[in-house]
Image (cartoon, rainbow, N blue to C red; front, side, top):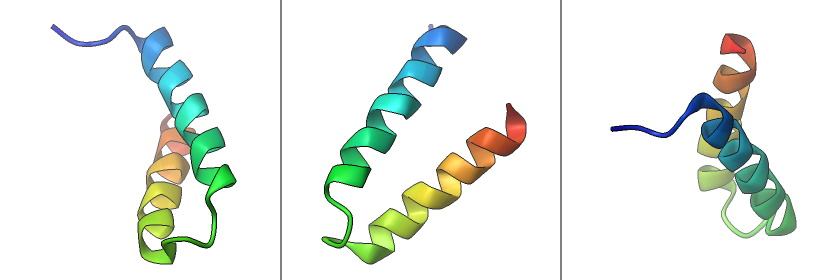
Length: 44
């Protein structure tokens, strides 16, 4: 059983706000997240 698409989108939006608030703390992890967001946008 997985999350509905609407909940997944809301989670991505929330996570992006969290990451923006801590930018500069862990550049490598931020790059991974940025890649995931880019892929998410590409598939949307």
